Image (tube, rainbow, N blue to C red; front, side, top):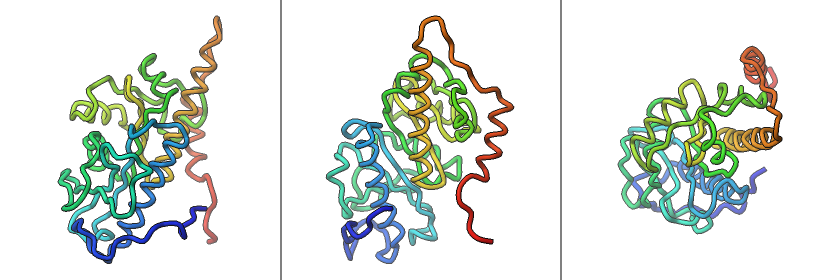
Length: 245
């Protein structure tokens, strides 16, 4: 459980164009910072590589359109505080007083404009990046493949931060909630930060399993057939705790 007692107070008079009463913005910003720091401690990124974003609906942000909070470019995550808001609208326009966003903003915005994603996580995880250099699709090595919509595709390489990369990523994400970026890393999205992060962690783990199983000379790992992934996908829809009726 997150210790909210350690969350610093947000400034009383923000200079970011966000209304002071928009508590959802302050809370989601701090959760985003915590998630970015976790990606470093979990070994999914190194330094300031990788990035995280979260959507704040207009009704909660106090603005006319949805807001996207995103990690800034070139700032170590352990130096980010509650006053360091980095936010853009869906057109990519930064809010006044906001830090300059990550160079990978085009990827994040492409997902928010084309899906109902609530959060996006991009990492440079070691095993996933290695797999992206070897195959065009991560085979169905484990049933958690179903949680991402099926075998995970690899988006062909394009320069980081480019619109071309964002477009190739969207193609790889069709009917999926995660993909690999060739010679680059991973992108996953979800309804919440927790879900998006869990998906990228699961993807890295599956890549590690596939690499380990494929390393044995003369042997090939067994893979799950499409019909089994469909059964698992159906079961996953009812997975977890349910509120009392």
